[in-house]
Image 1 (spheres, rainbow, N blue to C red):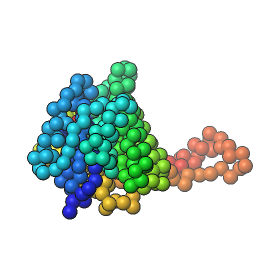
Image 2 (image 1 turned 90 degrees about the vertical axis):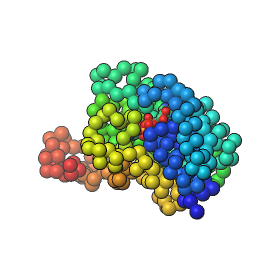
Image 3 (image 1 turned 90 degrees about the horizontal axis):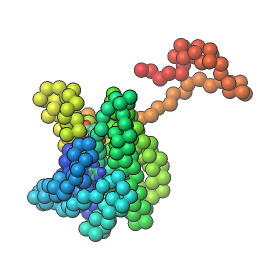
Image 4 (image 1 turned 120 degrees about the horizontal axis):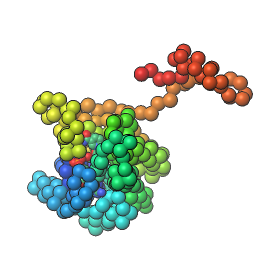
Length: 287
Ligand SMILES: NC(=O)c1ccc[n+]([C@@H]2O[C@H](COP(=O)([O-])OP(=O)(O)OC[C@H]3O[C@@H](n4cnc5c(N)ncnc54)[C@H](O)[C@@H]3O)[C@@H](O)[C@H]2O)c1
């Protein structure tokens, strides 16, 4: 029996890249898949049915169950439409993977509103627009659920030329950490994924090394972690962030060290005292 037998999984942006691999992997474990994809270009322009339809065809050819949805994740109506497609086809949603994404890279001084707004809209607002109706469906149904939100090392660690994308991806991580706390009451588990893979989003960035490295960076290498998190194998875990790519899986975390505490009742340091403690290595985390 597959790990996700009887589960219904919604994956946004599953018409290509990493999302398509999630869809194929999870269908292979017995899940019925809602394949959402707007079908646009890398920068979010255009649209069409063919990308989502292709993924659905691939799943069906392999003997799995899937339905297509072409809604835009960046609108409230789009999010509601995705849930409607799932309920009409399969009557429930057990797992949501927010994966849809676009890129409009530019160094910050050259970033304009038309590069900022759509990136925030698809990633950050899109995560809200789809999660809100699906989370409420899971809560009302009372059978728990899993929500996996796609962030990025660009948002969690930083990257040149991606202030818009990094802001959205860090926002997704913050949103997920809060939702994981709220979701505990309803057995809704929430995770953050920071993937790395060779797809149309990253193919012109270089840095993937030789052919052997490129092979290791294939997007299918990210999907086993997502399948694991969605399954009962991870049923005791929530709120965690994982890096995954090229065969490496690692937890990522925001950490606060013990630091130093001013003992005076005023709690007021002088800047010079702070400089002293900085120099003594008592405030900074190790590099
Ligand atoms: N490839 C990487 O190394 C990498 C690194 C970090 C994060 N990510 C994230 O992983 C996710 C998948 O990226 P990918 O590399 O597979 O790229 P991709 O372009 O192959 O996949 C993104 C998919 O999202 C769809 N999409 C875009 N806007 C949409 C919208 N408004 N509504 C519905 N669908 C929409 C696209 O049509 C596309 O099929 C993205 O969120 C991306 O930011 C990727």
